[in-house]
Image (cartoon, rainbow, N blue to C red; front, side, top):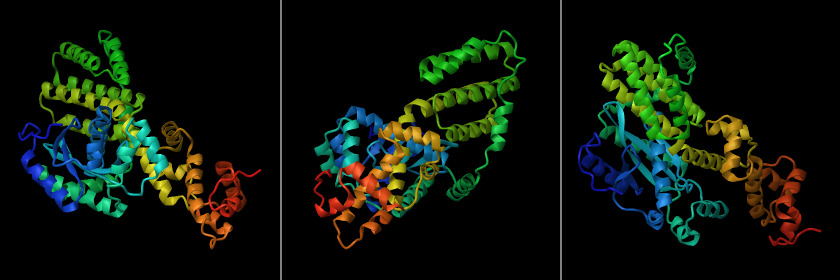
Length: 427
């Protein structure tokens, strides 16, 4: 980790940002770091005991870096702040430092818990990340548990600090963020995408095969080959158009759309790509030189590729933890897969697929496991009638609750209560 960067190569006052990060850490009693646009840590006052315990794991360090970068990208997308889960289920929040209209870095705070960690889920997470369970779990207990309301307030405060570090007007930025949150209709942009899908009158000399190779390379995540092919295609466009700026601009617009489609094919989030694409297509009208425009296009290609590959797994982990957190808070209600999918901003079919891939069992099984685990503690309290327990944990039908309980534990709820939790299997 590079914690000695004091220059201005990042595009903002790093020394001032360090002071702000330390002030935030000391006053909020939550660790705050500064990262660059690659996810590298450029400032960290002191690692928490938990982070120290996993610092030697190179594999996890990369996962951690990608998680911080993902949260920062999402914060940029959602107007300045974003609360997210890292691969170990810990809660962080990020806010981007914006200068000259672009993200130059970010402040990331955390880790904290928003609910008490459950051992069975924690064991699975640690094993998946090849981390020492006993050693890590002892430090995990030192991480504070904060209510969601406080985490949201801390996230808002971090946004205000990064807005102060940025070269933006905080009030104007907040107004723009509110406007973005209210703007849910992207139909105009989708229509724009459809009308920019390509030009059938393109001369036969255009290297269409190279274009296909470029899209395949992006879908496969090969940045080096992608850059080489993009440069060759741009070279052809410059040559064949006589460097006519308006014609080049039109062709670059087409390439942006093609690159975004390749990213979607690779599994990138639809809303994220559409949001970035809309932003990029508006920016192109501000360029005055071919060099500035082509350099901008290369950065877009890298960003789209990041959305597909470097951050895809992190995105899925964040979705799963958000879903699990929602289920834990609402298991006592009548909740469905559609409810949870809506909460994490995914369509139900895609959410179901991701959930099963990450958790190794489907949504209903996980929900039943949570409800039955909660009911076990209630069954030990004999003052609570059995019929009430089924309702308390979210089952409207007591007989169905009994059926699920016996299937998962091997005994009926009544037998479990009689044995005081000792699982003596029913005949």
